[in-house]
Structure formats: structure tokens, C-alpha cells
Length: 94
Image (cartoon, rainbow, N blue to C red; front, top):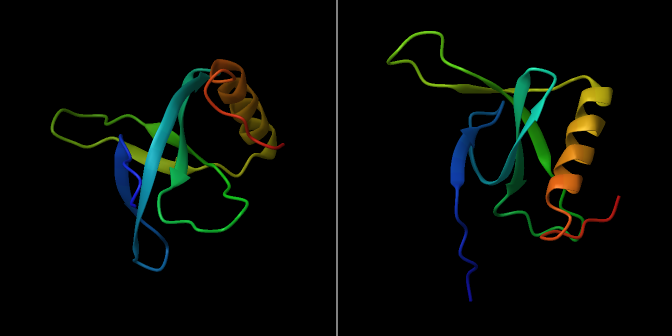
């Protein structure tokens, strides 16, 4: 039986392949907003959340963009906020 996902977005990876992600939450942190995503088709036992920074469109008609985050401190802080905000819904191993 296939699982039903809500809030699914499709992103294109560096190789040009489309990958579906479920948006688990949008977390504000230090004036920016970060998307916490989970790959939909990842069958591994230890699925890792993906955190991307939301870059708001500068002009009407443009789309918002998501950008990778290289700063480990920001990733850790955003994930900690995500866990705090969603502790009643998710149980992840840290």
C-alpha cells in the first residue's frame, strides 16, 4: 500500500533529476525561513531530513526559491527548533 503524502514539492537535484519531498515544516530563524523536508521515495532505514533556506521572490510574478545551507550551526539550530515545534508529532533519533 502506497503512503499518502501532503505538501509534496518536486525539486531538481544537481544531476538534473527530479526528487519529491514532503514539506514537514517552515521554521523561522534569525530573520530567514527554512523548509524542513523529507524525501518521499527514500527507502533507507535512517532517512535524513533536508533543510533548505527559503529565498522570497524579489518581484511579483517571480517564484520563491529554496537554497542549500552550508552552515552547520544554522542547520543544527533550525533542526532543534523544528524538533521543539513538532515534538508531539515526530519522534526522530538524533
